[in-house]
Image (cartoon, rainbow, N blue to C red; front, side):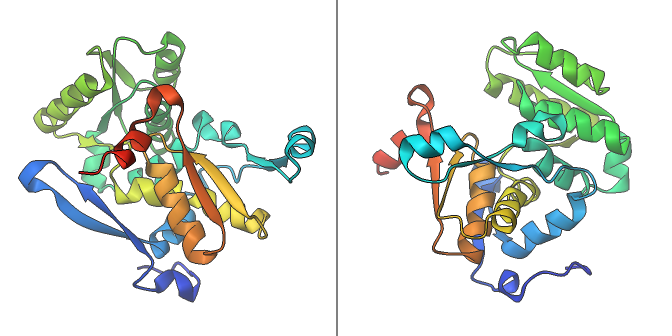
Length: 247
């Protein structure tokens, strides 16, 4: 690691999660350490907001405990996604940045990629599926991205983006299974512990998994007593159903 200062606990070999990157026979096992999250914090701090942790008196009174909201809706580009994406951009080589990057997204990830591209002067191409909200696509364009409509599902858009990535030698910006993305998203956890060190539990959306993985890694390593819950809505409960289906 470089000259980034991190707590000694962050350097423990036991402080990691494992993720799979690639497909089929090319799949490899990578490790992500708490020190990666601290490095990400150092890398992205000048490019993002340390967002507020806002208490809510009415909800706290209703359920009989103190409730706080981490206001990532006030983050650059409008969501936490910019944390991981900015960290990923900073891991690219100069040649990769010059050629440009590509990704597939119907919303927040694409807006984060477009925003980071504008801030760092990196050409960006976003493949968006047909159902994408036009306002989100326009936001990507305002950030300077080339937006291409393709596919009726995100999976089709991703497949097309990866084809273009290979053909045009553009770096593909993954939305989830990437150490840099997860480490960057995990900085949310560092901020929560800094602003509310006596927090008892954190509830976060599962989504594609990068936020929950990075947050849980940071929080549970630094303070194992804190409970971390991942949630999904009933109509999008793939993680919940997968856990019930033992394979």
